[in-house]
Length: 80
Image (cartoon, rainbow, N blue to C red; front, top):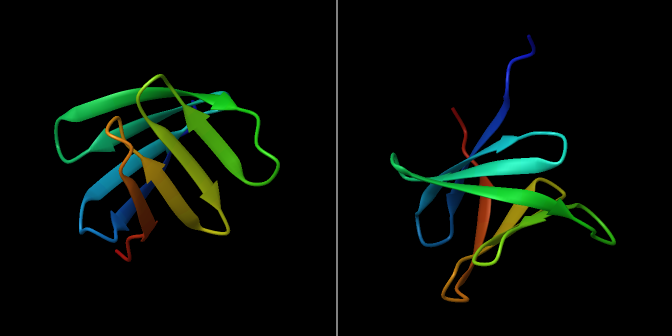
């Protein structure tokens, strides 16, 4: 079985998130406990996943995350 494709990010407000990328969905983990399932949605460019409260859009190794309050964060891959 293939290993999950995980990417860790640090956002401009210092929030740390992890995204487990799958074919048609993504699992967004905020901190250690909050996990949010998102489905793939059409994007003109990049990869976009959303549900009724959150959206992530990955483009050129940068992630834009919009949370349920409408707050937009820019996030960059964490360096191990």
